[in-house]
Length: 239
Image (cartoon, rainbow, N blue to C red; front, side):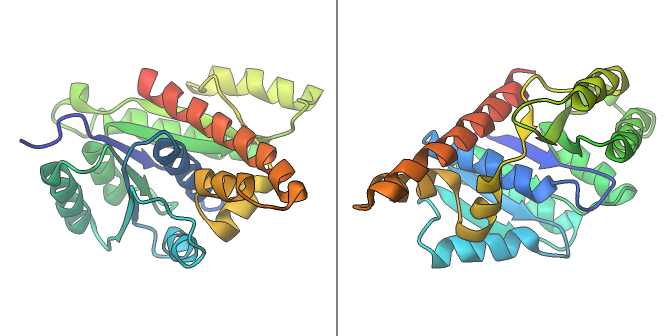
């Protein structure tokens, strides 16, 4: 029997550089650190996620439950998802997408259980994020059965650890523009380190096992990012 509980999360945005790949890496890290299995799929021709997964493997920082696939079109994507579904060996599928709209994104939306859009905390990015939300609303008129569309979530990213007055105003404005998730993604240097090294949970494990007390002390920063990523994943699943 196929895995009826497998969850497909697609990260979409109509702008490059919005943090889609970072969000996929963080969500996959959270799922795997929680003992789940995850298939990570790169559909972006730029291949950011593909290079990251290769670095994680080379550094020994990819957990046993992680697998990876690169696809070039929606037919390959659908076949990859169905294969994971039938194999019954994946709890999650996380999809990184190119920063484009059109039919490609429409088809990906129909394959997902959840759509997530990261929006950087700036007014320029809020306007672009509103375009992505408008695309999703328009999708309801383009599909035969809108009730089958997945829920759409917006994650505000790169916020200061101490929210400024300007950021507070942006949060209020964003909440009027689109459905903002309760958990926010802070600007953290460890997300850059995650990109350089591999999965957050594996980095934490290695640092905690280090004989060097300074390195063991650094584990806390990665653990905080992992907790934040897990909260984001839970918010998505509960919405």
